[in-house]
Image (tube, rainbow, N blue to C red; front, side):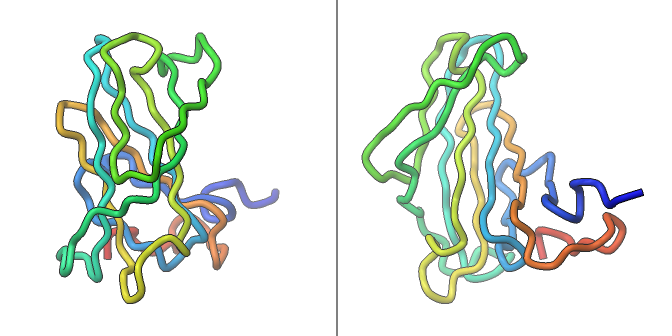
Length: 145
């Protein structure tokens, strides 16, 4: 049996709201954000030099993101903006879920960690993609160290 996606293509931190995630093991990271009840939210992207947040600063590289209801009943809608460190979802059902990616090459020199923080009650999931080294799930490194 071949190796499944976890460890070959992706690694994941399902509860990543406000958590520093190390970018060293992947080419990029995909952030999945969700807040139901058509409430709207703001998600802020930051970078830091280490897992304790040394030198934390906003990372204004988000130029596009996608939104939908988050329940699989509609397609993603592409949204564009001037480079920013935030994604703002409107208080409408079709923007309950937002998704955007950050390339490892987007980080400032000596910066290796990123985090996304919801200003409301939204959830954030971080998915490393294009893993540099493929491993079985049990041998994947912790993403926050």
